[in-house]
Length: 101
Image 1 (tube, rainbow, N blue to C red):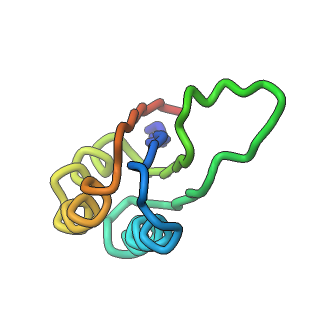
Image 2: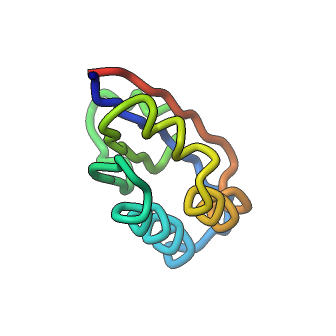
């Protein structure tokens, strides 16, 4: 059985404060331990480098799930819905991608 890496990037709306962004990511990290099969969560601001291939996205995240089934159960999970209630109003655009490793 493969692990799933669920990762994405956010561009927050103009005027969203650093405090609100921190609240979004606190809510994301809080899912660990509440969502079965969610192994770890890493999230934060883009770390500037000379490649500059971030396409305007300012923040990102990586979540590790123990299986596709756990990832699939996470998508409609109440904790994910709570996170979205906090984050979606703050996000201008997002992209999310999953890979099996």
